[in-house]
Image (cartoon, rainbow, N blue to C red; front, side):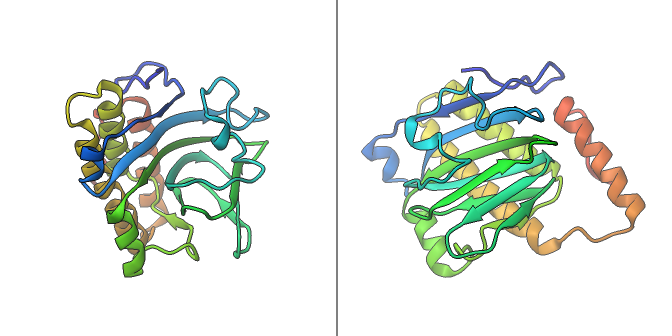
Length: 219
């Protein structure tokens, strides 16, 4: 698996599709897949170098999956199509939340490409969050903004799925819960503030993506 180098080296695409046991499922949430991709303009999507199972390759033309998929876009723009909703334009800070069994398609704009981080997950915990109304197929996109804390959580998740130490599925599940909570919280906060402050936060975020952990987002 090609992993990102979080300390200033060139970022590399990776995708991993995971196994889990009945013991892992008893935790009520399992990580199914995770990955990172930087898709240049005028490039195929999903990237042809990715080792994606057949069921996942039709993301740009239309597919259904058996789990929830959360995708965080930090550069570029694109579009999401999903059953029962109007097309949605995606941009920096957009978070896609795909639901099991919901036919959908998304892809970056050919002129911009995009950078994405994603995680797939399933289990009674996620189903209960859906039943509570906190998440809904009618709201498949959130605006989390360019949030360093969300970056950190994805880095933590990627480290778990890379190393796969004992009980990594349980630890990954805990990180996924925090990722979803962070997305929902940032979406409620919105992107308020002066234009100058927004530009400063964006600049800091871009630096953090290239030199992870060395830049504080606090004003």
